[in-house]
Amino acid sequence: MDIKGKVHEISPVMNVTETFKKRELVIEYAENPSYPEYIKFEALQDKVNLFDNVKPGDQVEVFFNLRGRPWTDRNGKTAYFNTLVVWRINALSGAAPEASTPEYAPPADFNSSAQDDDLPF
Image (cartoon, rainbow, N blue to C red; front, side, top):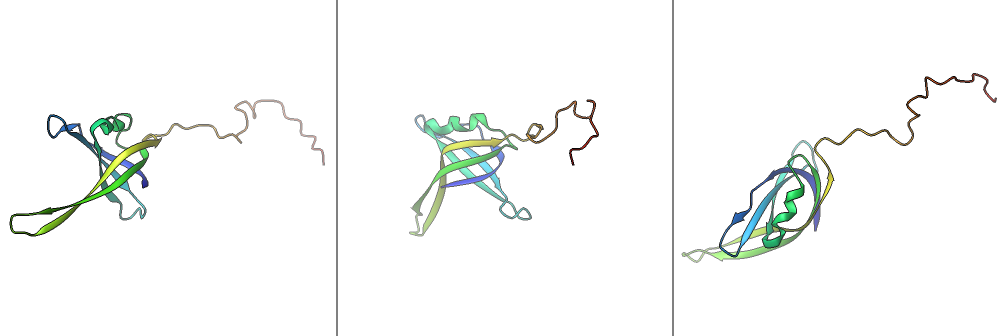
């Protein structure tokens, strides 16, 4: 599965145990800009470094697996948890994209050069 959005927050690496580490990423998903959603993803083990190359404000595409599991409390009541586990992330653009000259723009010295007003029609 994948989703595109803006990086809202990135957590530091959390060492849950000696052998297990994770890192969280929150994406602002604005399918409807009036009501953006904030979706939390996790990177596990060697994938925690995936978030090193992005920062809050970057537009990204996140590829993830949906995982779910039950948990039963002491009273026998079962609750279900979902986790979005990232396996790849692509930066689409930075927070402030650089302004570039479009391909169709005239050269910078277009107006300063001598123009011939003799039109061919």
